[in-house]
Length: 95
Image (cartoon, rainbow, N blue to C red; front, side, top):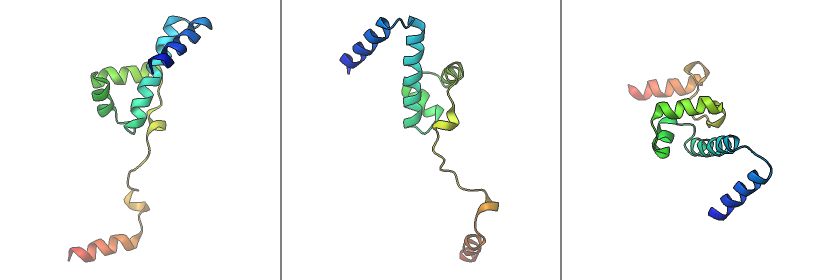
């Protein structure tokens, strides 16, 4: 892995990429990778990155990362979108 990183750095240097842009791209890729693995959970990502949650949020804003695009929706549908039969079964089971 170290060799791959060194090749990438060398390639960026030779192509004339400014240091600040290289650091920003590296930081962006690293933060996005962690957030993707944790389904966009910023609290858990901050813990993995060993930074404060507010620092991560500021970094996300500075890098213009779209958190919603990183999340895989696992939320239940709203009550209005659920089938009526499922609600009846639960009500009947409670009696």
